[in-house]
Structures are given as C-alpha cells and as structure tokens.
Figure (cartoon, rainbow, N blue to C red):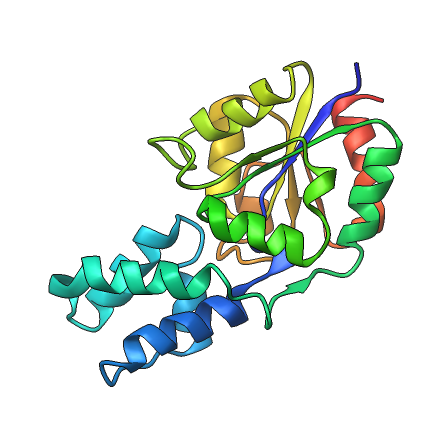
Length: 215
C-alpha cells in the first residue's frame, strides 16, 4: 500500500489570506473597524473562532464575539475570488495521485469553506479524506485531526505537508514525518521548526515524499 500524504490547506496549497482579510474587513467594517493584511495573517492558522476572537480582542469587541463569528462564517463560506493556488501545487497533487499515493487534507479551516474552495479549484476529487476545523471537537495542533485523516486513509506510512508552527507541532505530536512548505504563513525561522525536510518549490515534493515515506 502506498503511503498517505496529508496536506494542510491555507498557506500550504492556497494563499487564502486575501479573502480572509477581505471577509474580516467586511464584517468588522460594519462597525467602522478595519485591519491590515499583516494583522489578519498573523492570526491565521488556528481556526476561524480563534481568528475572530483575536481580531475582536485587538479592537476591544470581545463582547460581540458570537455575532462577529456568525457573520464571518456566513461571509467566508463563499469567499474564493481572491484566493489563489500556490505555483505548482495542482501539478504536485496530480503527480502524487498518479504515483499512487493516498491523499488527504487536514486543516483548521471550517469544513464548509474548505469544501467550497476545493470545488472552486477542481481539487475535491483528489482527496479521499477531508478533515476540517469543525470535524472534531479539537483542532490542530492537537494530533487527533491528523490521526483521523490518516485513519480515513486506512493508516500505514504517512507524511504531513504544512507551512506553519501549528502544522509542525501537530506532526510532531502525531509522530508523522513533516514536510515544511517555506512560502506560506509561518512566523518562525525554518531552522527553528521541527521538520523532516523543507521545500519552496512544489516540483520537489514528489521526491521528498518518496524519501520520507517510501514509494
């Protein structure tokens, strides 16, 4: 049985911050408040509730958290117009699938917008398992979502591909080799994050997967 390759989504396969930034500004803009892209990107990675909570805290609106989160989730589910695939990501996924690797997705993005963006880019059929931030009671960096994705792919050897501190911590907790995409949303230096290998070009991914998890 070929190894499983499980991917993070935001900052790994897609640059979604432009849409997240726009959605946040639409929601908070109704209250006369705006954010820079850098502010929003700094809070991405631990799921929508954490993102909205951090944004609300930054502007003294914690009392409105429930309403802000509901508005954000409603807005963000259909927000794909500004999101882009990272160069070479589609080709790398197709090459892995063609080579027989079992592909899964494990993201802290809520499941509905996750599936919506996969449909938008025509990627949904490539992933046998999709675990979103609301699929389980816990999110990454708890290892349970990653383990659930692997279980859904029938177990066996696996690697996790991600871009962030959260992803590195998750892979380490799950004892799964971690391939770090260096062009995403991490805030920590590459050498400071635990990883099996790092890459900046998706053309290198197939070889790294083979070296890390076997053919």
